[in-house]
Image (cartoon, rainbow, N blue to C red; front, side, top):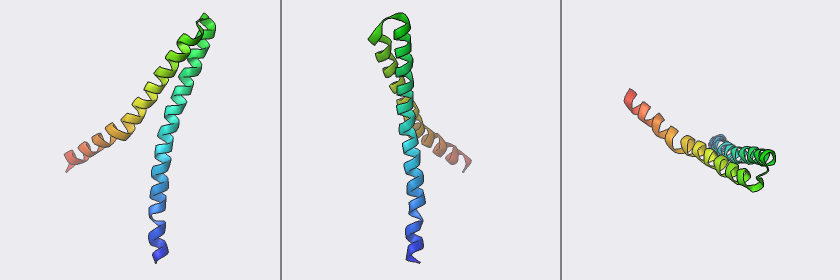
Length: 86
């Protein structure tokens, strides 16, 4: 019986860890994608570090916004809708 009690929190922990790892990977991927796009624009225009840096900042800001939305705003909205139904 004690083994069943210990087994229950683990899937919840793994689920939460996976969720937050996904948010972190989204942030990293958006930063990397915009960094790469900035590098391409710099090669095309010959303005080497300008758009590379700009792309990194834009990608990081977009990733942070996504992270903030999913961790802060979305739970608030879910709670507000739940309270309205009650």
